[in-house]
Image (cartoon, rainbow, N blue to C red; front, side, top):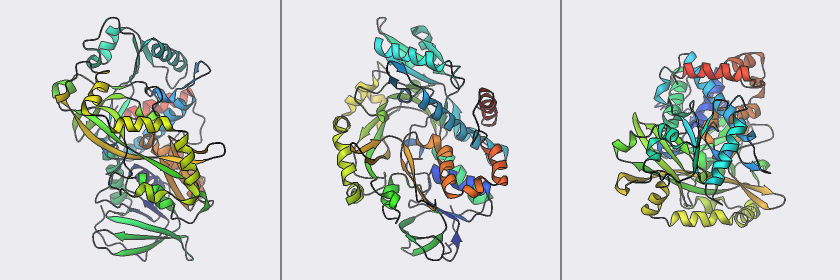
Amino acid sequence: MSKAKLDSTQEYDLICVGGGIMSATLALMSKILKPDLKVLIVERLSEVAQESSAAWNNAGTGHSALCELNYCPEEDGKVVIEKAIKICQQFEESKQFWSYLVELGLIDDPDSFIAAVPHHSWVLGEENATYLEQRFNTMKHHFMFDTIQFTKDKNKMKDWFPLIMHNRDEDEVMAASRIDRGTEVNYGTLTKTLFNILETKFDTPVYCNMEVIDIDPSPDIDWTVEMENLKTNQKYNIESKHVFIGAGGGSLLLLQKVEIEEKEGYGGFPISGEWLVCKNEDIIKQHNAKVYSKAGLGDPPMSTPHLDTRYINGKRELLFGPFAGFSPKFLKEGSNFDLLKSVKFDNISPLLGAFWHNLPLTKYLIEQVTSSHEDRMTALRKFVKDANSADWEILVAGQRVQIIKKDEFEGGVLQFGTEVVSSKDGSVTCLLGASPGASTATSVMLQVLEKAFPEILHSNEGKAVMDKMIPFYNAEVTEGLFKAQLEKSKKALKL
């Protein structure tokens, strides 16, 4: 990261707050589209990619709706896949962006952050098996999912995920589906790669140990960003035409300080996560798959259990989870007063409304927080029947802040997605929320570009670049276009 002294007299076109995958993606797309843009990135920790983007802090799944059952709800007796189609397209846009960087010679080792790992859905019980078959029958007719396989044959499942099928009873009812093109992504490595490209190829500084204290309107340009070097305690006031707040869980607290009316009514509910991590190399070698099941009745979407092959720091790993917990912190390296500080007069009603209408979530969190290691092992043994407690250890994952927003009927609703909050003129944008997060970074940051720099995106030069960088952008995604780009990304990313 930049070792040069921060020039407080420099005026910027864009300041990105937060050193995660979102800021990295936005800054790099902006510089590719208009290389003379003056962009600055600041991060409060000593390194980038240490919060939600860090490999151990997220699921590492290339979320493309190939296996995540919560993207295919049942409505009126039918399985609906519209959300799955949208998320699949969004992840393919991310792959197109990364592939473009490979084509430009900016990334020469995509296998450092992305690997091919088949995606599976697996369920127990007659009712769940019927649902999974209905999902298969719906998805196989759409070109994005037409390679999906389905089986109730236990021998076939032994081929797909032998660790899960070990010591299974003959009378157990189960079903599974599989799509081979699934991916495992190390978003921490990817984020560091993108920031390295920005610094070395696009003269874009990234300053760590720099905390943003406030963002105020400026009479000279648009915004003055007040920040402090946490090592030297030196304060700076930097002017910028645009500010993007991409500070993960910390975004809400910063947004609340910005003088725009669009911020009103937003609140946040922090949820921490944990994984069971396998320590036994012999067991790790027996599983090469991402296997997602269904969340329990009344459990929130983020609780969907999965047993995943991961590649972290050059080593193959095996994780199971996620398990939820509660912490008042909005960041893993945050303050215990974060939740309290986020309560404002304008969001009290949404907070109370969301709490009242999500009592099952409160019950679920209480159960999770009070769970022992053996309780977690019991959950794992639904996947790995003979799992030995000594082979697994708990690892604390990242901190997520779910959006709470005003609702006309319920006062406030808890939202399990991401949302871009923007001032009317697009000069301040802020990303709130979590899932599916990093997988959709390219798509979500295109929304930010639309709000902040529409004149760049829609110029003749911008359109020409976008056609090459993200072919799905502003295009009708036909079967021909989808499959051609799928093959192109597969080749570029060595999948």
